[in-house]
Image (cartoon, rainbow, N blue to C red; front, top):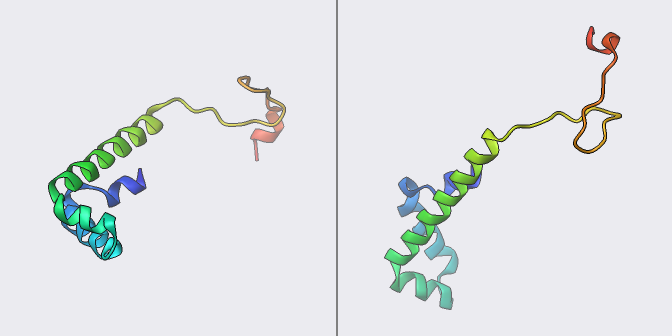
Amino acid sequence: MIGSFAACPCHLPLTLAALTAVLGGTAAGALLRDHLVLAGVLVTGVWLLGTARGVWLLRRPKTCPVPGGGPGRLARVPQDTLRR
């Protein structure tokens, strides 16, 4: 999700300028220069997919691994270890 913030559409002018500077002098740079709208659509798509995946990861249920628990099972923790 952090990577999606770099590809955020509000940063699109900065992202396209950085990509143009990095890819300058290459075939990919020439392709980017000639198709800025397509590049903007692709960067926006990457942002949308990354943000959707990040939100999905934040909302899915998580279990905390406990020593002695097998895969998919939670182990009982002795009460004296919880009272520290």
